[in-house]
Length: 294
Image (cartoon, rainbow, N blue to C red; front, side):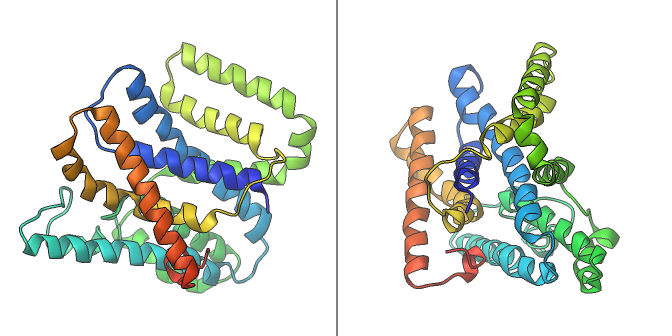
């Protein structure tokens, strides 16, 4: 177990949670903390996914079967559950859908995510990574993967975010060249630091995010630390933080007016709720929701 990777993964998910909190902050230091820095979470998580694939899964022949259990099934469960909840809430007069309509698009986009983010937006990451694994399985001569690939090729978009795929490849390259990177780590870090400084100077902030994510990963991925296996908890946070935030935000607005307090409460209530949920799932050994990560 590489505990530095576990810590990085958890930190990335926590950043992603902050990026989805609801607030009206649009400038100043709190905007940087709550809206700008958290966008780095998905970039780092993409690199981690590619790195872990190269380390543990690239040579396995049952790649597709494993990813159906660990990615596809949790993806389906989380989005079906939210579709059921929003439909029930609509019956009682509460409208929580703002991107989709109560028609076939709830299935084609809300669940299958043919051309846009699913009803649970952060799970687009799982969708794209799963389809990438389907392609990799196809090249390993597992032609059953076409069952998943063809509908998106014919009726939708194969990848919603190409940056996720490119950073996944970066993670795979880092793993493949890790011995060389260990030897030349200081040189690589200095080069990446200069690139990031140049991008700040030229105000290329979108590109800066990706080079900064690579720099952070190379700085930390081989640090020897003591930590815990938080894969199941991290995954649960990723899958279900947005529904909780959407539900509690209107309630918090009734009692608080300070945006900073509202953001922090969204974050801590979400993390605490899912921590308790994870403990219960682990106690009762219900692993299917988190891809059998407990």
